[in-house]
Image 1 (spheres, one colour):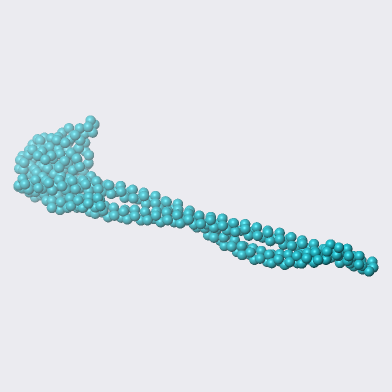
Image 2 (tube, helix red, strand yellow; image 1 turned 90 degrees about the vertical axis):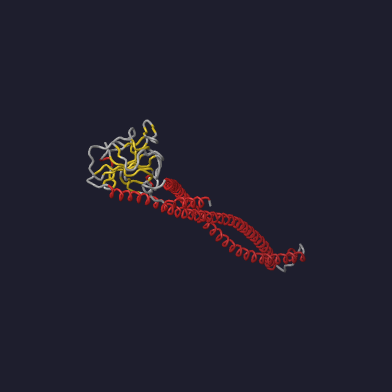
Length: 409
């Protein structure tokens, strides 16, 4: 919401340039003041737009880093989710297999249990029969033998009966042991199933958490992408308005070219060497030629040179006197849109010098005035489209800007 309000305010401020027009030489003071105010507002808007563009660029960079970090988080979660999914599926398969084993064991136990019942009944029957016959049954059976052969036969019968009883008892014991063993194995399997179920539930819970986290990261990533798209759209709109301001500055330069062509023309030669326009300040902060504009951020022709403050030792150029680079006639002295307070001097042969961004009230000459080389004509300032105090100095031949360094001493 704050960004939207700031953006609307910036848009309104930038639109002021659409009403901007360079005042005529004979404009009234109120018109001049209004023109200066419009240009000042446009300069402020341009500076704010440039600052906003830089802030937007940094925000987009931050968004890109955040998106990359979120993508990294998602990529880290993917193998964890795959591993948890595989573990869950494996546990489910193991539980299913154990359930099959349980069914088999239960069937086996049921069969053994039935056999155990039969054997127990048989043993009980033999024990009941032995009890009824009494302890002397086998001895009586032997003593009742008719002869030796009968004794042998009866002895063999007794041995078979005793052996059969022992076999019944032994089979019963083995069946009981088998039953107990199978029952113990079933209990172990049931416990294993319970353990694996608990593990599967834990893994599934972890898997749900990982999937939820991944979705949360994906949602955050989409949100950041949407924010980035909004920033990019805002940045494009901002750039469009900056281009409009830059085009207005270029239009002003073109107007100057047209005006000068109508006033002065010639070979472009100049007798001698021009004087340096700001004595004592010789640092050029921006040379003639194509550059990235410090306010608009666009690549455009810098039609002159910018003379700025000294660095060693530090010395502000603001308020420094500006002198005429050569003798001639003042053809413009006043406010000139993006150029701010400007003086233009016609030196003949189509050569005109231009001194821009002078202080408010700092111009020391007037239109039609003749000046001599080295005479003070104004004061360094920062009016018009300027980022700080400096002198923008141009040399124009038949209205078109050329490199001033070819004329200066």
